[in-house]
Image (cartoon, rainbow, N blue to C red; front, side, top):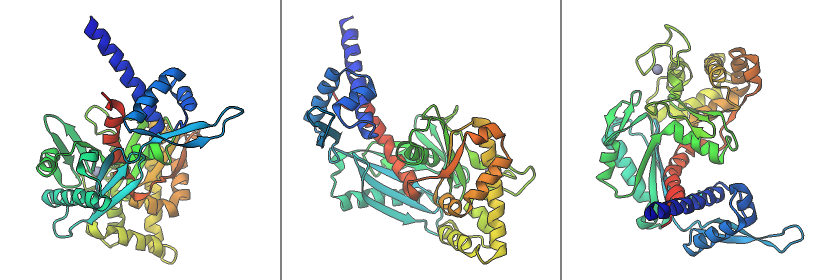
Length: 395
Ligand SMILES: [Zn+2]
């Protein structure tokens, strides 16, 4: 009994710490007073936990702010140098590795375009990640002992069994034991999730999704993915493959998709498919430049404009389905191709979504672009080890 009671007290203390750390991390509160209001903890509890966190070096006082009538309030924040996290984006066109401090300020970045000859080869990608980890540690001057963990966004479905397996059906990865392969090169704690889901988490916490409870974040690159946010958290489904938006059928018997089926949204709105349609099939490593050229050419070229109009129409139809099925308050388009296409086509995409959804849920939805740029997948991946730290830190 005594042990159980002690355990309960310890759990409560950890929960209080976590609530305060989350609030500071997401900048929802900055003074002790605001923390008390944001977390529902008493002023005394907040003072105790903050004293502990300051003693441990996790939280610092960042300055003073005037308060109405009273004495100035100390403003608080995460101590940027207490620890660091690394985010990895295994993309179709490049591998990104980025190191962030505790305030999510980027401190170092390494990017590796895909090797055209060895496209998506597992050993090549693992080698890029290994090189990237070494590069961001060297460039930032951060010792590996200060790294809280590494988050990895993958272009596929994660199977969390005895070992982590990646099923990247369109990436050419079939049950790749990525955890084991990386473990041969690093001792750092590793966390994995689908890249569209890590991008969704980044936009939800720090970008266009802030404050949203129900949203869909759509990632468009060579292919199409999405993250479904329900009740403020990412919806995973039974085996964490939920929201494979790219493989929703938009044309029965339509164009062949990379997944093997016909008529998937990805076969109309993914960059690879758009470039093929334009008569310029490109290796993944060249798609970013080629799509930018296509978008640039659309002003003068009716053929280019027609291809983009078609993509916008199908993408809008897909989004209309999301609106009808999930009644989101926000739909956010991101990914390198999503940002490129959205900058030109957003009005058409909205119009098509309107035509393909019911009036009432459409009126409750906004459709906009992500705010974190093409690096959002890596930033979101870095939040995976950060989550572990915020929830479980402390004695
Ligand atoms: Zn498909």
